[in-house]
Image 1 (cartoon, helix red, strand yellow):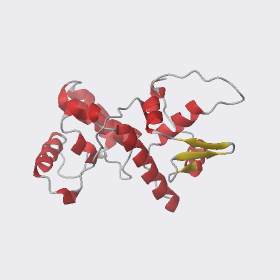
Image 2 (cartoon, rainbow, N blue to C red):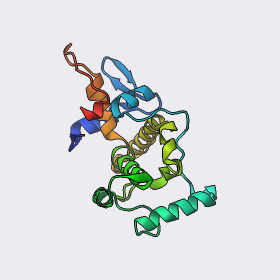
Image 3 (tube, rainbow, N blue to C red):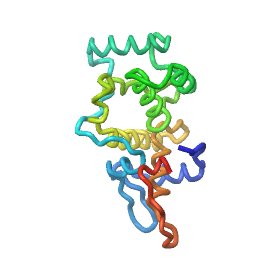
Image 4 (cartoon, rainbow, N blue to C red):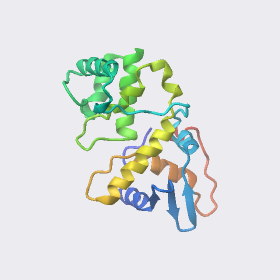
Length: 195
């Protein structure tokens, strides 16, 4: 992705226009509905049959707790997740191979493109669905993006002074790819994010 910034006015307009109850952008000439297939076409994420489950502290899953503790030890932290800003270089330094690289890369990608934490740490809760790297393609990350978008927009509309934590990059790329201006044809690529 070559996108380095999201124009503030466009971002705010998209958030104001987005209806999380109908999963659509309300445009002057009608609604532009967003489906899982749109997320797939835009970001190239899998639409498998399994739901992405974030771990909760009330789960009491000993196996996951052990897994999470091992993951945190690799990042030299005791709780929470590492700062997103330090992850990119640490992942590169460790080298690009194996299950640990894949998990770390996906957590970094999710934390920068799909759901952020206002405190700047990574969104590690999806590690619950990444424990078996060979099964990642079986998860519906497209539905997860839509859920994150809806939740984040609802939260933002309740208090617009808060940091928006949802997949704004997806929303912008989706809008720019799907809307045609003055009958101009838009050349489409799959996924849009790689264009």
